[in-house]
Image (cartoon, rainbow, N blue to C red; front, top):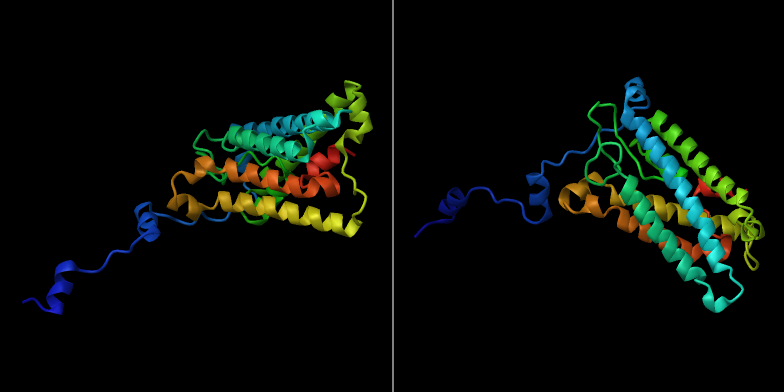
Amino acid sequence: MEGIGDGIHRYGERRPLGTEVQIHDKDYKEPPAAPLFESVELLCWSFYRATIAEFVATFLLYISLLTFIQVSNVPNKCSSIGTLGISWAFGGMMFALVYCTADISDNQSVSFLRYPDSGSGPSSGGHINPAVTFGLFVGRKLLLTRALLYMVMQCCGAIRGALVKGFEGDRMFNLQSGGANVVDDGYTHLAALGAEIIGTFVLVYTVFSATDAKFNARESHVPVLAPLPIGFAVFLVHLATLPITRTGINPARSLASC
């Protein structure tokens, strides 16, 4: 009859169970914080390719915004897509744009945070929103040069979209003031500010959660599905804030509609 000691020597140390095993199997390591500036990034084509992607994606987003507004303001309300339709359209459009551009700078699986071959720090794409870019920069997940150029290109893309729709001479574009944000009747400016702050927080928090390195190491399918929760967050925020401020949460979009 074997004793307790024999059992200990036979089976050795217990192995961890559950998600802890998965993390050890994948050799999870917390990625280092991005440095503030590295000049070598300015010599990488992937850097400029990602900024072009930000410009194009924000341009398409603003064109879509004005198209959705036109459809939602038809004279016959039975033919209008309404708040729910606009929210679904924006969420779906954001999902598609993030999926197409999230990892355009290094051609790997979809993920916001990757390291390019040049070793110049985290590559990134698919932000399509200066608030997201700024949040990732504050979280030390983005270089200063990349963050600044992303935000400039995002604003330029949105302004370009507004100019294209403006040159078309669309009557609905003029009636809707280019989709400018306004505080609707029944709401105070303080309530509108609170709605925008909460909505932007939900979006940026979702981006951080969807691109968390530890979560991605534990669940291998998470990087590919990262655009899905981001698009769904955009849908929910639009559903909640469209009746209040016509949903800003994107400084580039709000700037272009001014």
